[in-house]
Image (cartoon, rainbow, N blue to C red; front, side):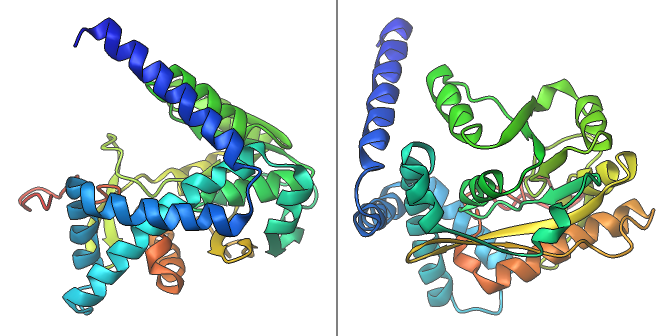
Length: 299
């Protein structure tokens, strides 16, 4: 198969997929979730390498659970992965009044009042786009976030359009560095950060995550210090009627000035959130890809 034909096929497949999502946006939520459940079971069966990644992650983080319990969690996480992906159909193409019924935003919304520099810690739960959409629809602030470009231009355009659909949002490319984000923070824009992935960046620190030394980007404490910003958490939870999106109060006395301790605290917050809904976290990512010197690879 020639490179030109592969590119043509990829373009047509992407267009078909986006058209399907536009159509799916108008279907009842139970049907969308049902399709997602079926797709999740299929992915669990056929995506063997990714299933192994999930199983390794769960074994490292939940060694106290039985193998049967971890298999059940793995199957459920594939279902949530598929359901939340299909939910982007109505999040990005559905009528605003439909979204208003399905997205329940609550908690410490007062943290967004005024123009104080604010960082939102938004971990990689499967409903992260629902959380961002709920906030962008309801909160009258300027927002920024760091965006990694997709290799497929059509897919990249679709994702960016969905994430910029509501509110006043700017996306800074990851390769552009931090200067723009810091300036935006200091000017009163809210910065969305999702630092809980192993990007293999220079400057990451190894701090515990469920007791495992884990390469963690210290972006939360660094941006908080440079932007003189408070940090709040936003946790989205998939529910039968849509999503529950909770805003947490600002972290007290943060950052402390100890970069390693402040980065470890990020993972402590994340662990607490995960323990309330372990199957909804993004376990399909190779979170433990980077290892401290002397430790063997786990994948």
